[in-house]
Image (cartoon, rainbow, N blue to C red; front, side, top):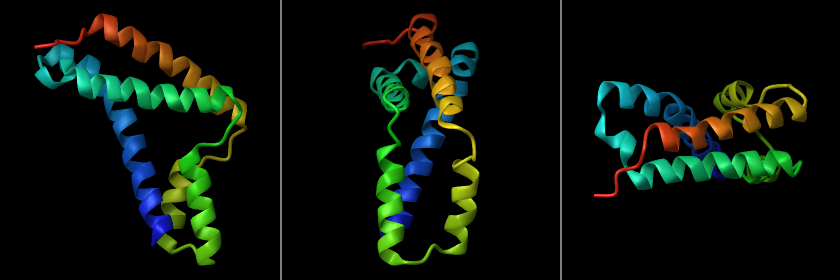
Amino acid sequence: MLATMILSLHLAIIAFNLFGLVAVPLGAWRGWRFVHLPGWRLAHVLSLGITALQAVLGRICFLTMWQALAEDRAGVTPLVMRWVNAAIYWPLPAWAFTLTYLAIFPYVLALLWIVPLRWH
């Protein structure tokens, strides 16, 4: 159950990160107010910044480590978890993820300038 909870949190964070990459520019174009909210945008930058930093340091995501530990302790990985794991853990070399995160992070920082925060 703990592994499932960690996987669910990890999946939610991935969805949040991907959603923000699309929603911010689209929302600016469509006039969506929430894309200018400082708390939401700064949480997005921080989340992607932590991801990029872990990759640059050659470290595996702490949620991935926690999930693996929980799965080892449980001794079994349910079928649905295996499907979700296959969707989010791609069999690519670590440098491919690092390069991807390093390409995405400057884009997110640029969005802070292109789609400015509104502090009111």
